[in-house]
Image (tube, rainbow, N blue to C red; front, side, top):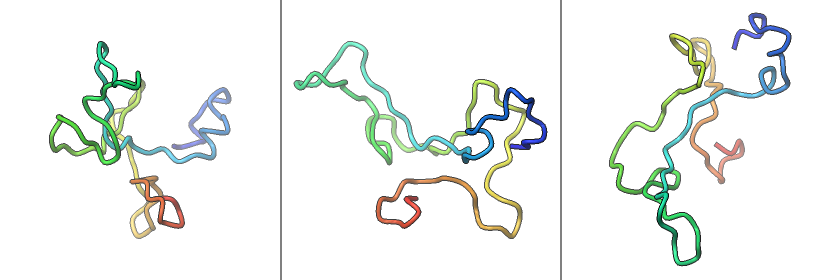
Length: 94
Protein backbone atom coordinates (compact mmCIF):
# COMPACT_ATOMS: atom_id res chain seq x y z
CA UNK A 1 0.00 0.00 0.00
CA UNK A 2 1.22 3.48 -0.82
CA UNK A 3 0.55 4.93 2.62
CA UNK A 4 1.10 8.49 1.39
CA UNK A 5 -1.90 7.99 -0.89
CA UNK A 6 -4.25 7.14 1.99
CA UNK A 7 -6.61 9.72 3.42
CA UNK A 8 -6.21 10.59 7.11
CA UNK A 9 -9.24 8.40 7.91
CA UNK A 10 -7.54 5.43 6.23
CA UNK A 11 -4.27 5.80 8.18
CA UNK A 12 -5.08 3.12 10.74
CA UNK A 13 -2.70 0.89 12.64
CA UNK A 14 -3.76 -2.03 10.44
CA UNK A 15 -3.06 -0.15 7.18
CA UNK A 16 0.28 1.17 8.47
CA UNK A 17 1.70 -2.00 10.08
CA UNK A 18 0.24 -5.23 8.73
CA UNK A 19 1.04 -7.28 5.65
CA UNK A 20 -1.64 -7.68 3.01
CA UNK A 21 -1.78 -11.15 1.55
CA UNK A 22 -4.02 -13.71 -0.07
CA UNK A 23 -6.36 -16.32 1.22
CA UNK A 24 -5.08 -19.86 1.09
CA UNK A 25 -7.84 -22.17 0.02
CA UNK A 26 -11.55 -22.06 0.58
CA UNK A 27 -14.09 -23.17 3.13
CA UNK A 28 -17.66 -24.12 2.28
CA UNK A 29 -20.29 -25.73 4.50
CA UNK A 30 -23.77 -27.03 3.83
CA UNK A 31 -26.48 -24.70 5.11
CA UNK A 32 -28.80 -27.58 5.97
CA UNK A 33 -26.43 -30.21 7.41
CA UNK A 34 -24.44 -30.67 10.61
CA UNK A 35 -22.12 -33.37 11.96
CA UNK A 36 -23.24 -35.72 14.77
CA UNK A 37 -21.51 -33.25 17.15
CA UNK A 38 -23.64 -30.36 15.87
CA UNK A 39 -20.76 -28.73 13.98
CA UNK A 40 -21.00 -27.52 10.37
CA UNK A 41 -20.80 -30.26 7.72
CA UNK A 42 -18.07 -28.95 5.41
CA UNK A 43 -18.04 -29.46 1.66
CA UNK A 44 -14.50 -27.97 1.42
CA UNK A 45 -12.17 -27.40 4.41
CA UNK A 46 -8.64 -27.34 5.87
CA UNK A 47 -5.25 -25.97 4.81
CA UNK A 48 -4.45 -27.11 2.22
CA UNK A 49 -8.07 -27.40 1.12
CA UNK A 50 -9.66 -30.84 1.11
CA UNK A 51 -13.07 -31.73 -0.16
CA UNK A 52 -14.94 -32.03 -3.44
CA UNK A 53 -13.67 -28.90 -5.18
CA UNK A 54 -10.74 -30.61 -6.88
CA UNK A 55 -7.39 -29.02 -7.78
CA UNK A 56 -7.22 -25.25 -8.13
CA UNK A 57 -4.75 -22.40 -7.55
CA UNK A 58 -5.62 -21.09 -4.07
CA UNK A 59 -3.73 -17.79 -4.28
CA UNK A 60 -6.59 -15.44 -5.09
CA UNK A 61 -6.23 -11.76 -4.25
CA UNK A 62 -9.55 -10.17 -3.45
CA UNK A 63 -11.17 -7.13 -1.89
CA UNK A 64 -14.62 -5.53 -1.93
CA UNK A 65 -12.87 -2.45 -3.39
CA UNK A 66 -10.26 -4.18 -5.54
CA UNK A 67 -8.09 -1.93 -7.73
CA UNK A 68 -7.42 -2.60 -11.42
CA UNK A 69 -4.25 -4.48 -10.41
CA UNK A 70 -2.33 -5.47 -7.28
CA UNK A 71 1.41 -5.36 -6.68
CA UNK A 72 2.43 -8.11 -4.27
CA UNK A 73 5.63 -9.62 -2.96
CA UNK A 74 8.64 -7.27 -2.82
CA UNK A 75 10.81 -5.06 -5.03
CA UNK A 76 12.98 -6.92 -7.56
CA UNK A 77 16.03 -8.43 -5.87
CA UNK A 78 14.47 -8.26 -2.38
CA UNK A 79 13.23 -11.09 -0.21
CA UNK A 80 9.45 -11.67 -0.46
CA UNK A 81 7.37 -9.66 2.02
CA UNK A 82 4.25 -11.74 1.79
CA UNK A 83 2.56 -13.87 4.40
CA UNK A 84 2.12 -17.25 2.78
CA UNK A 85 1.30 -20.83 3.69
CA UNK A 86 1.22 -21.38 7.48
CA UNK A 87 3.97 -23.65 8.84
CA UNK A 88 3.94 -24.26 12.60
CA UNK A 89 7.50 -25.66 12.43
CA UNK A 90 9.05 -22.57 10.80
CA UNK A 91 10.52 -19.81 12.98
CA UNK A 92 8.43 -17.19 11.17
CA UNK A 93 5.28 -19.32 11.29
CA UNK A 94 5.11 -19.50 7.50
